[in-house]
Amino acid sequence: MTSSTATDPAEPGQDTEADGTNRSRRPPKALLVGGAIALAITALGVASLIFGGGSASSNSQGTVAREGHAAPAFSLPELMKAGSVGIPADGGAGGKPVVLVFFASWCGPCQREMPALAAAVAAGDAGRAAVIGIDGMDQTQAAKSFVTRSGVTFPVGVDPSYAVTSGKFGFVGLPETVFINGRGIITSIHYGATSPALLRDGVKAFTR
Image 1: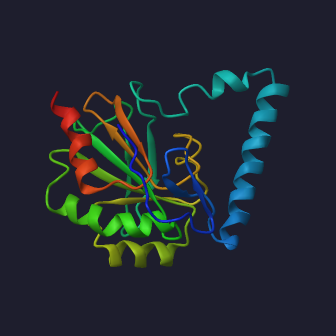
Image 2: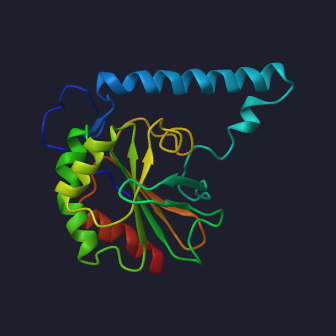
């Protein structure tokens, strides 16, 4: 899948990729404390594996998403209502394709991406695929306001410590979009903002 190219200059808190795509990498300072705690917990876990006779490398296998490989399974609490969302071990609910949209309210490119992307999903551009949002390292009220303002109708999972965004999929910058077929295999990963056209192109692979 070819990444889109942003024409806006990089904003504070963004990195510009080699292809010119801007992705937000820096959440508000208040949220960095939670991230630091999560990293400390991860470090303790790795140390435990090493000194406890386990293998850190074997523990990390399958935790970084790659095209052509099985999608990591996960479950997250829903943002807008009670319940949970996620990916079962086979990658799709009864063989149904899935599109994961990773975003946050503090992410500049996400703010520009989401209204059009949400409208495209509501219009049926994702076809038979289930679309799930993953809101990373965000404040609850800010996330809810962003989702409502952007017209998001698909379920959104809350990932306050990047346990799924980074821990399972290996993402640091936002936004990202992951396309998973009904067999649970990642068909493509789009780094940066996803347009309605890129959404339609991504789901076409499910019918091939």
